[in-house]
Each structure stands twice: as C-alpha cells, then as structure tokens.
Image (cartoon, rainbow, N blue to C red; front, side, top):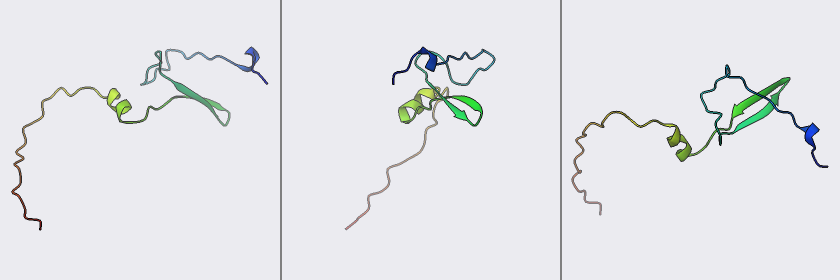
Length: 76
C-alpha cells in the first residue's frame, strides 16, 4: 500500500532547544519512540574523517622532542 499525505506529520523545533550540533542543511536527525515519548537526536557520524572534522586546529606549537635513533642491534 502506498503512503499518502495523511500518513505523515511535521514537527518544528523552537530556538530554545539549541543543540551542540547544527540543524543546518545536510545534517541529519533520527526520530523514534521511547515509551510515550518522541525522541529526536542527531545521527552520529562515524569514522576518523568525521571525528577530525569536528576538531578545531591547535593554536600552539609542538615542543621539540629529543628522540635520537637507537643504536643498531644484531638480530641473528
């Protein structure tokens, strides 16, 4: 059976419910029921690239580290 317009409902989120993640274009949320509550939460991006995109560049320089090459070892 196909879905018609009566099968869908729209919801609006007021500004007082500001989240640490953005509702801008391209971001996604998932909506589900939890008992008698309707829960809207962000879709968590996974993977290293997604994590790195959330990080801010460091403002400090890395210190110099004394890391000399170890002496060769005789293995066999």
